Image (cartoon, rainbow, N blue to C red; front, side, top):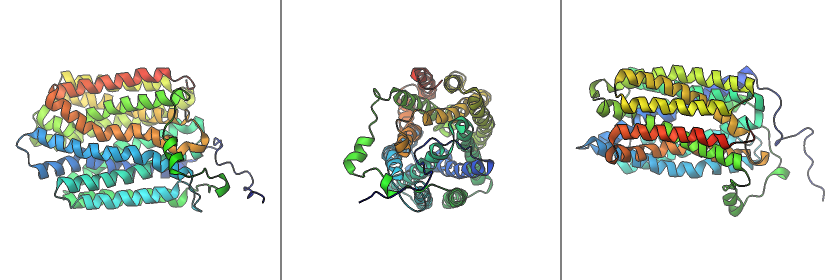
Length: 423
């Protein structure tokens, strides 16, 4: 029996060579704007205040710990969901393509879970529906990230990765502004970011083509093969291992410095009455420098054909910002720190994403391997509130928290030096 023939010139695993055009990038950036707004508005504002209202603590650290536990549980699900989604999308033979079905599934699950989260009045309920929301977030972001390796040539990936990163800062600002200026209640706030996310993601799904994988090329699907695929030997693929470790460290440093920012303003700077305004102002400063760095340095790394120097500098800028907050706890200095943090993390998010696509072990498992890489972004964000709350409560307050943030960022910068295959 003869094997099914493939369409002429079908190259699902080849490195793409045709540049993506402005409409592709615009829809890609718009989708990420919606995704980040729906994920980060709860993390920065809605979830901490919801937990605080439920716990009604006699000491504010109780609220921080409860928020940390909820985030940590969600992080466990992210650890599983990212590579699982990538592996499944690598094997998907739907007539709609490999990635598009998973983008839709993830976006819908994410939106519905956020809306249901808005009506929860127990910590258990919050934990369940925030975990489901994070699962949806991981599914949609894993699938859409894989389209970079599928469709974007190497020398355009710094620019395109900038459009993953820049919408992150914009999403936070727009989300916070909508909640504060429209004076939305909790359910309305969750519903607005959920519906907006769906409306912003779906145009990418409907307009951007996604090559169909013929069944003859689908890798065997067994539970054993799936589990085995989650382990990538760092000895056999050292550059992948070093990049992953660097990502974990830098993202953990960033998360420690940002996820408890509202609490820092309220209790570290003793500004509870102006905390929301302060948070918004800090976020605006962060937004401006983040976007400049993400788009500017991402493109510059393409032109220079170098990634590692940008990653070093980005990590150390984040460390410097954290040290300023640790030793000069003042709102004016916090503004300077927000600017430095935006420069550093914007540069890191754009350039490191491009670097990550260049150290993947196999073109046949891009989705799964990038899913593993994405763990290094999502899980630190999820576990940082819990780890940060422990540091604040037991190991030196907010000064200790920001010192830990600086240390992790600096270690992440040093680690990427070991990558050899990318300059």
